[in-house]
Length: 236
Image (cartoon, helix red, strand yellow):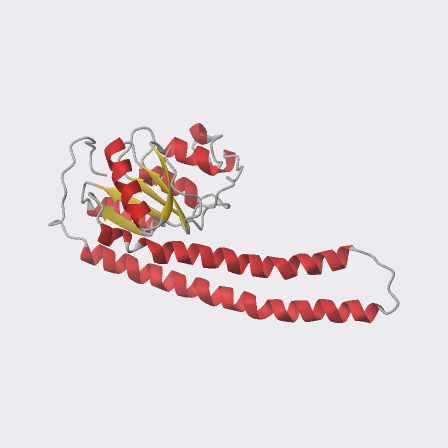
C-alpha cells in the first residue's frame, strides 16, 4: 500500500492487481497533487474503507462498517481483477450507506460497450480505457470537488440540527420558556435555506450525471481499443 504526502488536497484510493498499472496511476495522480493509497484487490479496498467483514456472503447488509480515519474523495479501480472485479467493488460501495457518495471510476484495457454501460448504470462516474492518460485524470477533479463540497454542506446542515437537538433534550432553569422557543425557531429558519440548496445541488448533480452518461456512451467508440494481455476475460 503506497501513500503520498498527507497534506494533499484530495485523497484517491487506487485499486489494480497489476503493479505496473498501480505505479502508473499513482504517479499520474501525485502529479495532480493528490494523496494516493494503492491496493491490489477489491477485498483490500473494502478493508481500507472498513467494509472488510461479511464480504464472502455477497450480502451488503452483512458488511460491517468501521469507517477509516482518512477521508476518501474518489475510488479508481481496474475492471478486470481476480476474485472481485471492479464492477463488484462498485456495487458494494454504492450499496453502502456510508460510502455511496464516493465517486467511483472504472478502468479497463478492453472497450466493451455492454460492460461500460453496465458500470455507468450502476453509478460509475467515468470509464477510462487503459493506459490512462493525463487528459483522463483532468476529468477527476470535478468529481472530487463535488464530494468535498457535499461533505461540507452536510456538516453545515448537521451542526444547527445538533444544536436544536441539544436545546430540546436539556432542561435548564428557564425564566421565560418562549425565549428558547424563539431561538429554536430561528435556528430552524436558518436551516431551511441550506436544506433547499442541498436539494438543488443534488438535482443538478443527477442531471449532469445523466448527460455525462449519455455523452460517454455516444463518444466511446471501438476505435479506441488498447490491448492488454495480462488479464484476459470473457466479455460480459
